[in-house]
Length: 55
Image (cartoon, rainbow, N blue to C red):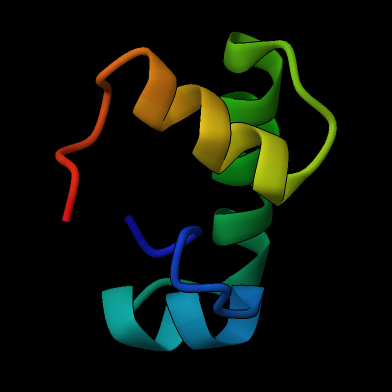
């Protein structure tokens, strides 16, 4: 999970070959679905709900 790596939108976009605006849109959708307001909260909730594998 790239959000857990504390990467910027630009860094995530570069890794996925998409635009930073697309990353921002996807991040906003993740926040909405997890009912959170920050990347840190999103990462915590994703792990808590087993939505991503523990590394």
